[in-house]
Length: 186
Image (tube, rainbow, N blue to C red; front, side, top):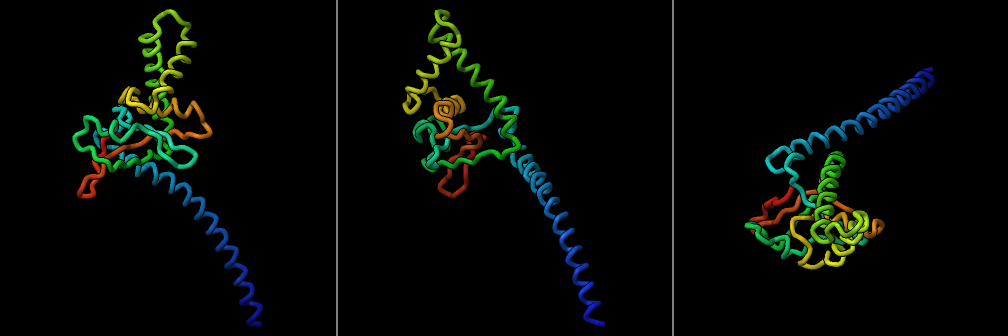
C-alpha cells in the first residue's frame, strides 16, 4: 500500500513542477526585456548619450564580419583622446527604431542639400538623388567623403548591397593606454 501512495505523490509533483517551469520561463522573457530597457536607460542617460543630442556613430559590418567605417586616421582627426585602438558598441534593439527615424531625417536632409549644392536646379530631384548617391559611393573609401556624416556613409553602403552590409548604430570610443575607453560618440 505504501508504494501506491508514493507513486501518486510523484505524479502530482511532476505536474506542479511543469506548471511552475512554464510560468517561470515566460516571466524570465518579460523580465529580460524590461531589464535590457532599464540597463539602456541607465547607460544612455548621461550627457551626450540621449536621443535629443543626436550623439551616435554608425558603421556597417559586411557578411564576413568586417567593420566598414571611416579610416582610423579619419576617425581620429581633431579628436583629443583619439588612439589607434577603436572600440565600437552597438546600441541595443529597443532604442534603434527611434534612432532610425532621426537618422533617416538627417540622411534625407544631407542628400537634398548635396543635390542642390552640386547639381543645382537643372536636374529632376529624384535623378539628382541617384546622381548624388552614385558620386558619394564612388568616394566612400577615400578621404574625400565628408567627415561627420557616418550615418549617411553607412546607409549608402547598406543600400548599395543590403545582403552584404548590415547597418549598425551605436557608440564609438578610443581605448586609452590605461585601458579606459574614451567614448567620443554615443
